[in-house]
Image (cartoon, rainbow, N blue to C red):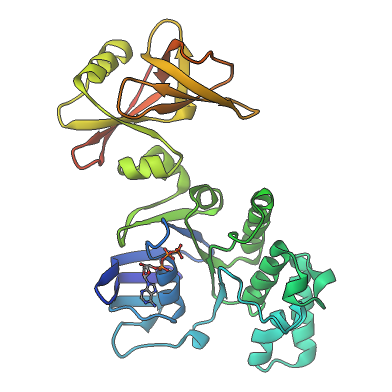
Length: 348
Ligand SMILES: Nc1ncnc2c1ncn2[C@@H]1O[C@H](COP(=O)(O)OP(=O)(O)OP(=O)(O)O)[C@@H](O)[C@H]1O
């Protein structure tokens, strides 16, 4: 049994069905990311786990204890031993960083010398010792986030929940703050569930990603597995930006002739990743180069395959716009009528 289990959780707000029989299991010390577009219900999931919101149906189990069975059993948030980092951090504005972090310990009536010891320890770990006498308004976004994380973990909870914890941090700093946070939660050894809409953030942090869409988890797996084996065209595009394109008779013919892969009837879409595409002089799918952008380590080109939408490819060298080239994807994905993945073909 995992540290956190959701079993068949359903939640509606009025007529708006937000969660539909979702189940989830996070192992002890796992870093789980709930990924979904805005409004898909990520915060609702965290709120159900923390106990702020109750499910209509299903059960919530933390460390083997049923904390909500959507009936009589309901353990309130303050008794669930959870640390919560809110999207806007929700620091108490009139308190110093020290007092913010100390707050959950003082609520538990710990002796003041113990409070001080623990606050100083966690502040050092998060490198905010020098700003402990500052009020939130005197802190940078990154420092505020660290105070919020410190406040959430200072009582050594069983579980850490974080709702979009990087959204208020300068994009240039996000990658390093993200990395620090991952190192920290692994060092402390705490089961973490984080909500985000940012697939790159999810991929870089998660042991496993639970991808939420239309009230359900459509894929729940390690980031590499989702990247390599997306269950459908939506996941393929959302995770890592695969080119997903309609498969007409002309393209099916080119794929068979040039890449040696026979297309089956019923396969309606095909896909390939920009980073899996080589440019070939001898064979491949002919495309017209519409334009490109220099990104330092590579060029990103938009190319036209004669379909209703263009594709992206990466290249190490400059290609003239308006020329026709041949592209050779290393791996091709095929999707059926309902857009689920039918097969993956390695091109040799
Ligand atoms: N208290 C509430 N009353 C009514 N509707 C709500 C309530 N809380 C959330 N909702 C609705 O439930 C849906 C899911 O909201 P939720 O905040 O869980 O999504 P989210 O994925 O976290 O989105 P975001 O990333 O924008 O915060 C939305 O349609 C939202 O309007």
